Length: 493
Image 1 (cartoon, one colour):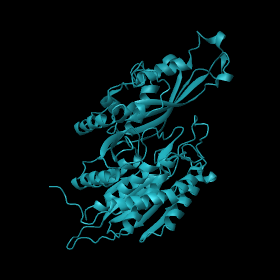
Image 2 (image 1 turned 60 degrees about the vertical axis):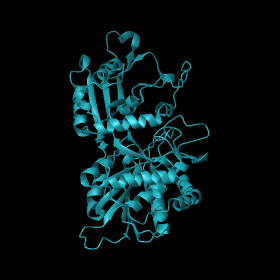
Image 3 (image 1 turned 90 degrees about the vertical axis):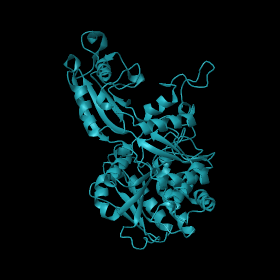
């Protein structure tokens, strides 16, 4: 039997009107200030503490939250020694526990992060990573969508509940600053805060994506990730290529040989079976439904360089034109990306020299059910053992984060999501797996195995988080904020 929804739920139209005004009059400006600050994650700014950018965005966000004067809200900026700071806030429940119940007041945990990816190249000539630009409902700039908006949207959703005097559960917020580095600082904070987190019944994570901007999207799975640097050394210094080539092996050719142990270069399929897992039947069924909704949008959302399709509407570049296979490739199958390189001079500086070494930064996306720590060790052995020509080959792992597969959705949450999507978007809620990683979700699923998960976000088509021209789709963010408020109002006591 379906669990009944609480009698007093949000007036969605009124909430959306209030939230839209708050976004227009305040939040967009606050996010513009946030975009201007290069608060790069510690992986990309090892001197983050000295530079002070992370502390600045934390202080700005904390000051804004406190300035809202939300009844019953308390906030702290926590700083464990040697770790990036987190914002922790809690809002006391206004909904009583049912008479005769010995259960603890259920808690909603709202999550986001304030650290950012680095600049990247290729921004449109009138845009830049640290310059906010608002155009056609899109707020351009690094970090606005991933994930600076989350703390502002979370509090705006709480304010919508308060403004309608709706009894609500206890709500806590956890806003971290090392997510883009794999959330390596988060677990110590979760351990320290565990007694204060309470009985977490619902997690609202605002760091994910959307298949389109037309409906509410729930993330059902996340891939894991591991990174590291693979370096191939053959010489102590560069030598004349005419003198040495044919005798000294190219470090680049050895690099290619090593990567072929890992990846089929013709198809992109990862070869070692331990990096794969079976796709659960329910996720396969969901992918089939989602593929029907998105269709060609699965391909057209990307900024393809080559659009000459011979009359077809799709670019010629996708690895597969089967929408279901495309979804599974980016959500339940491992993939390799080379995200950086050293040892190769710029083109203008490249002389006829056989280079002494080649180094690649590798990023390996892992299926949701593959253990990242084990994968790091397996990858190191695969790449370092039996090096061609006895070259010096090293793989220095940069860390790994496990993926996540959502628990079965409770009846009350399914009803609440569908109701919120219809009320705020005029369309049903849809589900999608995501290819990125949110390390917190695996931690929370282990720590709070009975909690329901509302994992959502604003990263829809062409929003391009981590790359150039990242934007936040403000009309979607407004509706998502209202939908979050409505779902919270549905949480059973």
